[in-house]
Length: 156
Image 1 (tube, rainbow, N blue to C red):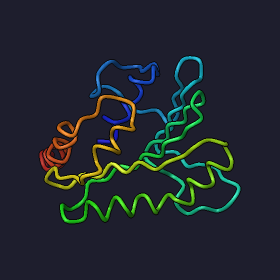
Image 2: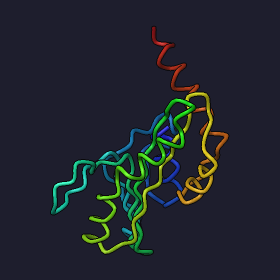
Image 3: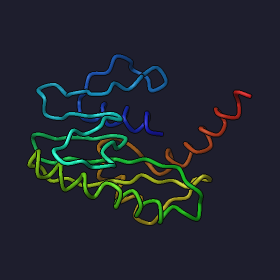
Image 4: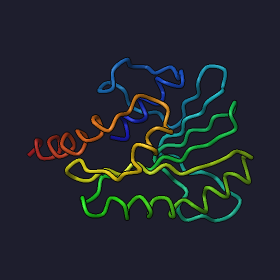
């Protein structure tokens, strides 16, 4: 699900990708839009002045024009734990959020994208996904756990 999200964000923000299709694209660790307005970091540690144990979210979107930064953390969990996992992801990156705001002088927020193993999600899921640039719908997200299980077990 993370590569699909990264692909959609890159297309929406104007980042030039090597491949036109999701299945051909391999996310790069850092990609910048034309003009340097938006920087997208994929699975990168954030270098901070202080030691922060959780400093590597899945995707970081830094919008230099708007002065904002989004830390996107993706997870597929058990159906009963979706709300708890969202809260866990938000709290996990609270220190990093404060440190990024201090260092980069941008408004920063954590966006947890958590889906249950059978495609369930919380009531606040649409609100979180609505903040992310790109055309990501709850319907597309519900397919991801099934697709991941199919590709994993299809190999054996």
